[in-house]
Length: 287
Ligand SMILES: [Zn+2]
Image 1 (cartoon, rainbow, N blue to C red):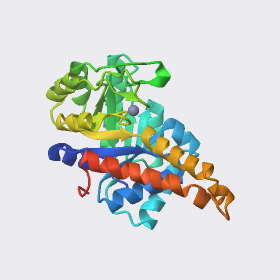
Image 2: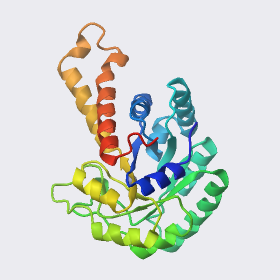
Image 3: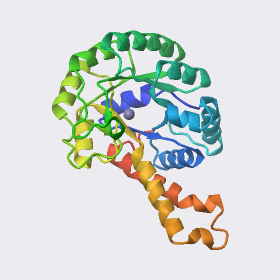
Image 4: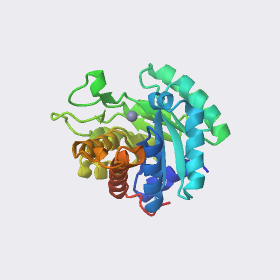
């Protein structure tokens, strides 16, 4: 059964480790992540962006697929199904469809409007036992033309949003979605420390986990990060393994064209990536 992310993140914050959010794109992704979390006895969060939601034929299709896997793969570790960077309407749709966690990204609104919309969702999710992630200070990305440092959140605004009663808070600390540019300035630990001081026990979320060096990840966890989002890294690993299979001509040998064979190296590559992240984040055997 899907669970809210609240308990797993409260434990992570107290235990000084982080739970990984791995974004899913299809059945292979979901299966690879769930099996690896189970194998490592780790709690896990499956992330779904609105775009991935459309691609997978809607939130209800995803809820059905994930619930079916939890049962048929005998998954016993805590699993949250979470909307990533949701709009207000998207969050409502996911709550309706059976997600156990949602993110409302109001970081592009003026702070007053972010507070107003987040407050409404705090009331709704609390009533339903669903966890809610809010965001302050937009997180940069290549698609936004941001090169170099990502944005840094205002710690005072972080406190305002945290005090509304959200479950977890994403704050921009110089992190970026996608691949990091060569001239990236690194995470702003000053910002993170200031946010942590203002928000206390609130689990903090680090977006854009792909390509942040391991020592910076560890330092971020020490400073209060309890959830780390990984998306691009699984995509790169999947694409690379699939490319190698095809470039080696394996799809032309025997029944190598069978999708169950063709996609298998990609699935193994996702598993290896997830395994490596769970070890780095310290959530193995914390289920
Ligand atoms: Zn993000």
